[in-house]
Length: 500
Image (cartoon, one colour):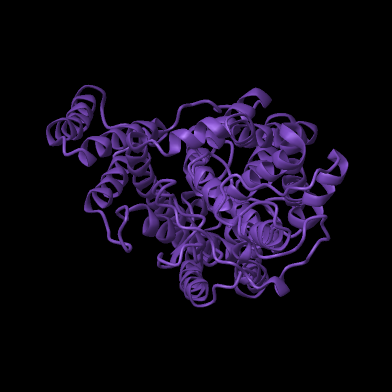
């Protein structure tokens, strides 16, 4: 993943603190802004606005300051397509730094203070923050329709590339030995990426307000209990709503109702287990995509997009449960491959849904349906992002600063950490040890060859983890993905060939 980046606020009395954009926010009031990058590293685009640093401008603290140029819709689309869509490498941190550097620092569309407020609002909205920021600036330039055009300009390059990658993946075939060798090496690399993402999300989701990164023990307990609930196969939605509500009680020192709710969840689980048995793994799913028809794929994307608070890693568990466990139409190893592709392409990571829709459509109705499936699931995934950002920004900005609701979001954020942690361990197990299908291969020598790969995969995971923490440049993820794919030809190809 890309490195956490931080920024000094415009106030001279505020200590700079780092903020990982992929992490769940505490609230808008506690969100810490981003660090300014070296302008020499960013491609500049001429603008009618004077390229000055708003921090030196007398209006830099004005939350109403607006110097956005008025653009025609075609020009606005090209502006965001060329400047940000084509260069959206390195994950959300790098994407947001690029947008802020060019639009706010160099071209002075709005003040830094206003950018910080807007970014804080978008952190609690479903969808990728970088796309939401593009829509916001598009609205400033050309109204709500401009917001739609700017968002499309940012998303389109990544969508086209993922659509092409999905098609090539299908053409190569799941049984292509060279293809499988590369992706076998990429699976533990993706596991390392998810580990770091889980760590960074947790790091910023369990911190008390108004403190220098002081941990809130209640939020840690919420994260742990949610992980336990996931292991017990309690529905994700129950845990998210329950612990958001419990945290609202805890923040007001209403110990009795908080304790009562906490106890009732396990009493209810015990009663269910006695009379109905322990829930199955698919009980975590809503069952909205048992078959990958086009309406089901759109609904899958819509629900996953609504859940993508803070980024794609909150949507991954839901899509995995629905497509891999409940539906059974997407193998686990293919699901891990799509996350790897999402990490390397210049796009928000939620673009992995395009791959899922393509594979689902291909399973259900062939290649024609595959392209349609990729489109409809992507529309569903990004629809909440467009809706909340363009239609309801003013209302949401007021709601975000509501202290009562902010504690609910705190509990929800901490709860998501537990969900993602369980998904990480599931993906890590299958990416290193393989799946049950691998050990049923015939002849037996093929199954033994698969088992022997676990040691190599474990080493790849550890090496990838060290690299991700040691080198935090925005290109680290891309280099790691490409290196892993090449290494797979040397590390796993012989075993694959031998097992065929």
